Length: 192
Image 1: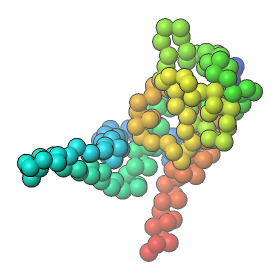
Image 2 (image 1 turned 180 degrees about the vertical axis):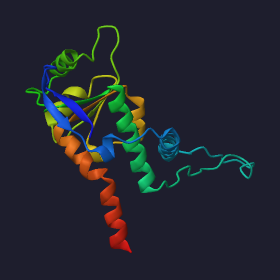
Image 3 (image 1 turned 60 degrees about the vertical axis):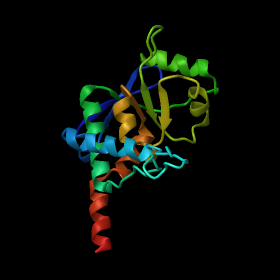
Image 4 (image 1 turned 135 degrees about the horizontal axis):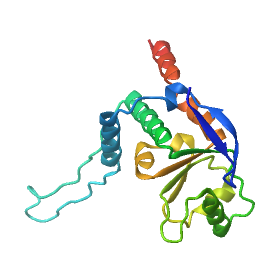
């Protein structure tokens, strides 16, 4: 089982956490990650070009670019990307994201103490925590190159796009429940 150091907001190690091997110990599958990113970008595409003239027979018409990708493949791509971020050392477990005041200055101070904000360059950071943490959401919404999501809103594009991934301990448990491959096999046998 892979283990990771748990840090507090002052960047001090406060312990270790054992991560689920089925989620954070998966081999890198580049083709699966590539297919999942293409699916995500295609589903985001609008396709709203249209013509409205006499020659609209051959002009551009609205088109739906989205297509379905199997749920197992999407979750497998998430597991592979999270495992690779952990192996690179770019996945950091934080004990708790408690910010006293919803001020951007406080959030930037916390990110600087964690080593993610330089004066010249900011690191693209994805924070996975509960969206009910209102102070964190309010304090970080004006900071460029920072995105906050919860475990259920996590997508493959955000993991690939952001250089560092910060996950709270509660979000790790949420991901363990959401991405557990054993849970997928249970739903298959119940459906049959």
